[in-house]
Length: 273
Image (cartoon, rainbow, N blue to C red; front, side):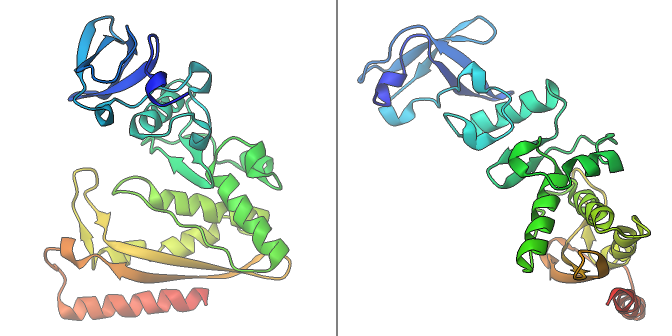
């Protein structure tokens, strides 16, 4: 079946919308090359004509209903912006799930609320399990890195990225909490607390106000956690590897104050080394 044949009567498509970004619609008739519009029935029941100057203007196709709300975006028949946003919306609203896989990548939606999904009983459930066997979770990513490290005895990296206010610091904290628990740390919350304790100091030297965060860090941070032969945590170190100077418009601290802050940071780092 060619791509043109997919645009037949009853097929689902996504069309741009100024308010909802994307809205779904059903084709009311087959599309034939050369036609200048598609006749659609939108999700609210109204009919609309979607202009098509050339085949390249055809709207993205919708996925079958059976794939709606799947926990891995790569399993969708059609993977595009509209499909990704819709699937994330369904999982968040209908399944109360903030996590979704996209292959080996974990997509997280910040709920801006405390959720009861990070307790030790959840850590125990994910410990020793494969990513494919469990629902998407930050603990599953941490378990994959931890197990690969202990088996291959090679360093592993987890990249946590996102826009301001997306929850990067909290995700890093939950990852370190997982390592502390599965590594048998005597004080399970001390590791992430001590590593993240230098955040306010560094942010006082470089931060910026955004529409979603009054105190958005302009630092990219590299957190290094050391493990012993038995997989237990033996130390940690935080390095600042990037300062986005273009968004730090002025420095409120005096030169002397900044120098003292740098000393305090060095002292903190020495604790973990």
